[in-house]
Length: 302
Length: 178
Ligand code: SF4
Ligand code: SF4
Image 1 (cartoon, each protein chain N blue to C red):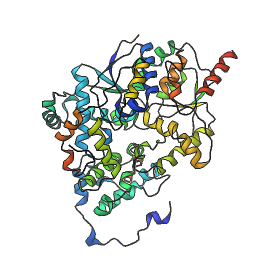
Image 2 (cartoon, chains in turn cyan, brown):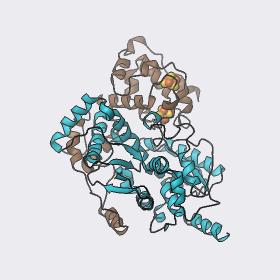
Image 3 (cartoon, helix red, strand yellow):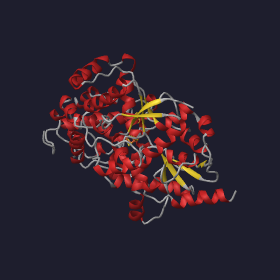
Image 4 (cartoon, rainbow over the protein chains, first blue to last red):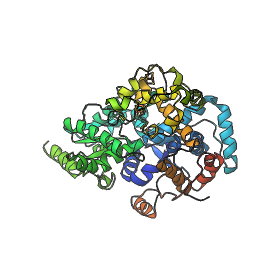
C-alpha cells in the first residue's frame, strides 16, 4: 500500500460541477491508500486569467502552491486545466529559476502571510495512479473486473500537454496512460479517429457554436467505434461531452447516448464500489444505468 | 478552407502597418518566439478550432502580427478563439509556442482596452467568489450528506491578491465594486 499524502486541489469546476468526480476520486484513493488533505483556502488555480492578465494568473497559482508548501505537501489536482496551469507555475520557479519574479510575487503577498519557495510538485490524479501507484499495484485492487466493456479514452489536452512540463510521464502524440488504466479494470480501451481532439471547452464563454461543432466531431468518431462509454479526467471536458451531449443531439438531430464517466468512476466500479453511494453516478447527465445493467449482464453470463 | 477566409477585402497599405507591433509581442511573456515562424502552416492544419471555424487561423494571425496589422489583430474576435489545446505547440517545427503566444496577444489586447465581456465577467467572479463559479449552500448540503468536507463559499482573499497584482490597471471597468 502506498501511504502517500497529498493536498487535494479542487479548483472551480470540480467544486461546483464535479461532485461525482471528486467523490469517486476520494473513494478510490482511500482504497489505494492515498491520503488527501483538504486545504479550505485553495482558490481558483489562476488559469482563467492567463489570457487576460498574466501576472495575476501566476500570482494566484503561487498563492495556492504556497498553501500546500506550508503544510509540506505536494498537490493532486483533478482538473486538467488546474494541473496544467499550476504545473507551469511550479516549473517556472523550481530549482531557484526566475528568482527575481518569485521574489516580487512573495513581496506582494507577504502581508497576506504567503511565501512560496518553489518546493511543491503538482500532479494530476490520473498521472499519480499511472506513474506513482502503477498499473501492477492497481490491478491487485480490482475485485470486479469489467470484462467485455469497450471504453473510449478521452485524454483531453492539459493532462499531457505541453509535454515539456510533464517530465515525459506520457507521450503527447501517442499517449498510453489512460488506455493502460482502462485495461487494468478488465475493460477494453477502444481506438477511434482523432483520439486526441480537444473538447473546445476553453472557448465556450466566447463562442458556443464552435466548441459544439468540435464536440460533435468527437462524439461522431466515438460512436463510429461502437463503445459502451467514454472516460475522461477533466471536469471541463466533462461539461462538453456529458452536459452538452443533449444539446449536440438536438442541434444536429443525431443520437449518441454515450455515457461519460470520470476515470475514477470506472476504476471504482472495478473495485466493487457502490455506483450510487460511492461513485455518484446519478450526477452524470447521460444515463449510466444502461451501462450498469450491461455490466450486470456480462457478469451474470459468467 | 474557403477563399474568402484567406483573401482580404482591401489591400494592405504600408503606411497603415505598425512595424513595432512584433517587438511589443516578443516583449510579452509567451510571445518571445513569434519571429521564428516560417509560415509552414502546421499549426493551422492541426488546429481543432480551424477545422470547424476558418475564422480562426493561427498561421494567418501570426503573419498579421509580423506585418504589423496591430489594430486589426487586437480588436479582433478571433484572437479569443484559441481553445488552448497545445496541439500546434507540440508540433511547430520552429517552437513558436503558439498557445502561449495567443495568451500574450490577448494580454496586450486587454491592456489596450479590448476585453470581451465574458472575460471581464470572469475577473469579476474571481474577485467576488475566489472562483469562476459560485459555490452555494446547496452544494455543501449535498457534500456533507456524502461525507465530503464542506467548502468555503467564497475565498475573499482573492480580491486582495488581485489588488496587489493591479489587475484594474488594465481592466478599467468591472461589474463588481471594490
Ligand atoms: S507551425 Fe510554427 S512555424 Fe509553422 S506556421 Fe505555425 S507557428 Fe509558424
Ligand atoms: S492551441 Fe490554439 S492555435 Fe494551437 S491548435 Fe489548439 S486551438 Fe489551435
